[in-house]
Length: 133
Image (cartoon, rainbow, N blue to C red):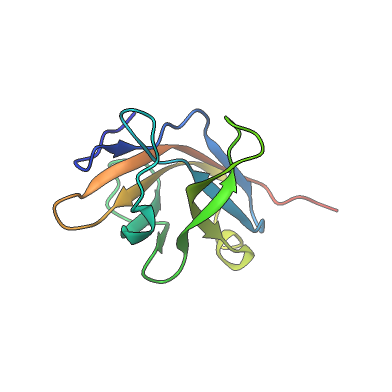
């Protein structure tokens, strides 16, 4: 799992999968080495990128906290049911996913604060065909 210069990381245990035209949040639990959630998560600057591969310089999609696409919000803590923890949420609206092609890609969530630039989470990202209702 990627380690950040700020001592925080987000363990990713499964890949992301969305369908073309689907609107949904992506959730990230960011913790320090001891497993604690940093108290200043909502003060950080975030960027989320979707690319063909990790090495590809061209973005398929970029989301930022500056534009309001990424927020820190309380979310149910699946490790401790009945309690909420602050989690990083990346919002993918339908208008964005409608523009994607089905396939396998690479995503990365970055902390972009000066002196603390680091990957918090990254991994495979699968875009499936649109659902037919």
